[in-house]
Length: 513
Image 1 (cartoon, helix red, strand yellow):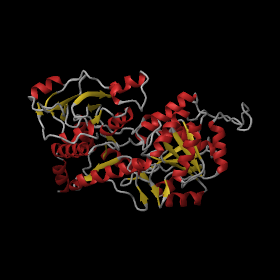
Image 2: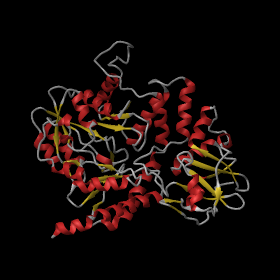
Image 3: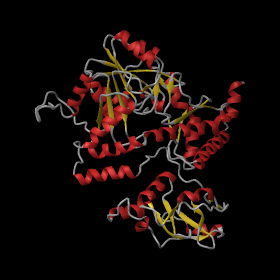
């Protein structure tokens, strides 16, 4: 038996709490013959924390929460075991025509979802405390191969930085981005530090960094002993202003670090041309741009080195983790040596340089290998999400600037970032508070580096109005590839309601007078 396809049109208001839409119930139902791996897939795909188990007649026979599944796995259950080994038979369910107040009384912090059944005992709807529930900013998409490969590591005993999954992940990643020199590392920040160190950037050198980026970009420069120099970004793209970078060049400048922010690539033709004119290295911070391209070339593969992050919110994840790719094999070889304490690869415990311990574990790499298997689907989901957002928000073009791919680029849309047209930073904060109060995890755009205490004395060039404007007026919408259509609609409707409550359109009219 497949999924039960008998939803009953039943929506009920519960004093501010709303019954879930019945069209979603079919996504939560599995047959008793299903396997634990299928339960895991449903939990990951729906975002709900409960699966409904039905017998051969479609009658509700048990429920499985994420907690039930976790406890079953800890007891030794495997992914191929029947789902029923994790099922809770002592569950709460109610008739589909139950009074809303009765349903509300059964919802609690312990019981997050109550199945609603028809007279034959078949689930036709369900109630939760909210119609859509909490909408996260990002979520990892994990499945049975991630678990299978990690279990293989554990069972083999190869759980540290030695093991077959490390090389498999590096080789698979190198093939995906079409760059043969790929080295895995423990996180995206040290990826940058290793790239700089392998290229010989250090004390006495200056590195040009965009003012609008996550702190890891500038921190990596500082940790190498080099001196960061902050320059502005183009406000529409939120990426490095190459003209500003040219103004910042001095005899001490050794490298430029373009950051492909939120998946939008920099104008790499201008960057590489400027670097060639002044004999500078280009280190691409592509932590947020896996899957993005410039004129067909993958982000991170155009400069002398490129770095990626696999934090839990990235396109693919290893929990923590990162990757560095290099144009020159000789530089990659030096980086490999530095990554492992500066040890001579041909003579164990003989150290050639003062190196680092930046290695990725086999456990992390095992997850990475499984993630690479689904990277095209994840990237497609990001593109579909961006298209749905743009379609639903197109009528707000008088109030919002929606993201678009810059010329010559393919945008991965790691995050979907909108910017307010009203020039008031307080409005963005109010809108974020409005949406968070309704359980939508929107985020502000990164703060400009020059505003924060650790970097207040860093040399900057220009007024940095692009970075300030992008930060003050930007809002990062939830960008999980697992978002459902009802969740997307909820985000857009709430954003629209917030704009109305705050009166953004009226403010724009007043400012135009």
